[in-house]
Image 1 (tube, rainbow, N blue to C red):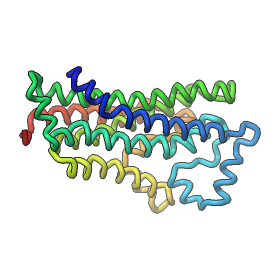
Image 2: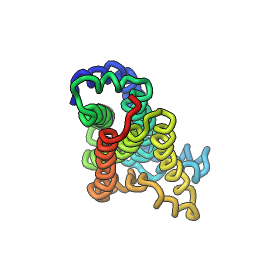
Image 3: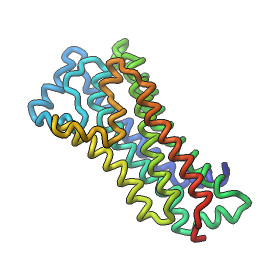
Image 4: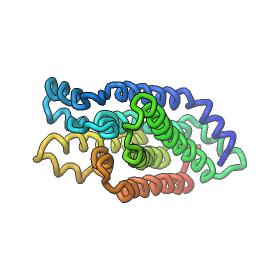
Length: 266
């Protein structure tokens, strides 16, 4: 990796990463504070009263969960923990490679005695660090805040399974954006697929939950491998996580390989 390029990435993008992380933490704390251990089903009753079941299902809300981990799984991990970080990874993936090539900045980087593979590996490492940062921040904040607000009510193994699944999903979505950023030399095409595919997968997942007729759509999206409520109830977290993690890491590696071999307009 190239230390100078890492420092540039940190200087250029730390506000964006920090802002997204803080907003995600804010949403998490708001939802955590909505939990009522005396009447844990009140949120579901209010939501069902105002919104149709198909819409609630599309957004990943589970109205039956009464324990704290299940409440968070239904109201935070069902949509916010999926969609909000995805936007950050799409933006970063595009900026870290394709935008540098398009603006000519990558030419200056590669003019130094470094290889293309080193440059791409550095950008991949920065994006991976951002993914781990977001999930680690939510995990640590969730454990600390739940112990403070609701001592003894958090099912810690279930909460850790939730975050393991979320981490694997984020690695796949960020890997998609990174790969297309390495494949294309302009931000237009990079975003078309680097953003288009994750958004398509998310919309397909939402549609698949709206009714029995749309259930077949779940086979068209990797989001199906991340089922927050199943993880809370004790489902095996390892195999679905590997089903997301391995393709994600493969896309990072393939992106580095493609960038190392393609013709660059430098």
